[in-house]
Image (cartoon, rainbow, N blue to C red; front, side):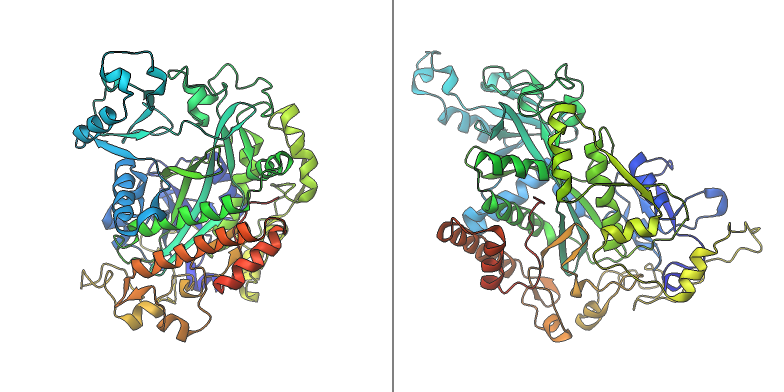
Amino acid sequence: MMEECFGEGPFVFRLNDSGSGPQLLTQVCLERGWKEFNPVNGDHWNLWWKTSGFPTSHHRALYGWQYINHIPKGSAICRKDNLARYLRCMRKVYGSIYDFSPMGYNLPLEYTKLAAECSRSRPESEKYGGDRHFAEKPVWICKPVGQSQGRGIFLFRKLSELTYDSNTIVQRYIERPLLIGGYKFDLRLYVCIPSYYPLTVYMYREGLTRFGTDKFSLNDLRNPFRHLTNCSINKLSPGYGEMKERVGSGCKWTLRRLRKYFQQAGLNDWLLWQRISVLVILTLISHASQIPQTVNCFEFFGFDVLIDNTLRPWLLEVNMGPALGNDCDVDIMVKKPMLHDMFDLLGFPLHNTGLSVFDIWRNSRSDEEDEESLSDSGCQLKEITKMTVLNAANKWRRKPRKLSATSRVHSANRRKPRILSPAQKPLFPKIQPVTLINQRLNTEDPVQHRYYGDETRRKRRWGNGRDWNMAPSSEGGWIRLWPMKSNESEDDVNNNTFYCNGNLNTKNMVAEVIKFSKLSKEIFKKHPNVTECQRNDFLSEGMGLNGEIWLPPL
């Protein structure tokens, strides 16, 4: 099967245009038995991973055995101004269900609206020349649209303090965030979109809790270590390596450790995570209708979410290329299995290299004692054992895929590929396409790759045979958020109410999410003393779900 999908020879991965990328990503690819792209051996590659986007020509030139990690126009919500505009439009149409992002203004276009809002929000004494109630003024946060990793962000109260030289978004600052030990934090959540037609959304169970390294205070708006949680900023702080109250050393926790803190603090967080699921789905629905129909590409997002002191989540931004660095062992603990599980979800092959290079970290309930020691010893985790790649992958995967006998023999007895001369080298690797689109996407009809009849759209497959009309409920730590109810037959696909004449029916999709949100609140209110599993059962029964409910590990 693997030879039919990806051609003969090794699965080849390519990173950016320069050939270099995050060390952790490279390590995961090599652990799966893949080979790094070498232009000397020709232009053959199976996966091209880029931090930035791809031009349209790259999407049109894909073969059935080639994949790229960006969907055309999929990164539109990663621009802060676009995200604010999409959410504002959806709020006007669908109301308060979209009230999960701070009010914002795109500058310079909406400067007059911002000035009017600042004037309305001034204390009465300020309007008549007094300045004694300065602390009552709301705080605003300015974010340059073209910057990342917290660069160029600053806070201000007076409009006269606002300066900018590029497109910028200004938002109301969340002045009462939930604090741990006096420190502000936010969440980095990982979301994978393997398909927009049909829309399929997965979120990883584990994630990062990122802290500021100075105690939060509105009396000092110029100190970024109090107000920004980006690791790229806080690792430069003098307090980064210090033992901080409740937080410990460094600036990162796992979601598992955060949930354990909530449990110890007596905070019932079940409804919080359901609100976050709703937030993620609605954000993606807001721009899904703008995405063209394509194959063999996927998106990998990093959602940044802030929790206020009422346990209400707020969307801060969506990152197109979430950092895959390994600044501390918490990064390795979260990101390494996340990447392996994502490649399993996407159906990419795994070959046994015979090398014991795969480090397994504890990822079960017995880890809680080790995670508790993080507050005392910083980012330190214990390495348990080493094993071959196949055994390690089977430990993570709930449903390991079995290769055919031919594939197993081919993987076990792999030899170094022979480099052929240009005259000997075939034009393309041997491949028997499994998609209905069995040629290059830029065929004689330049529009053919974008528009399909309803029947063709329903039966389209990736080059690896994945049918996202029958999306699995989970893969490893990845949990399907949308669709909430998976199709179980071709009749379910034909009767899908979320599509109308091949286009997304946004109204029906939002209505389904609203129903999920209301039912979650009712269950949380009516059953305050039941367990999480019981609440999940009530929610699944009420919604008719046939998948899992997303919750971080505990």
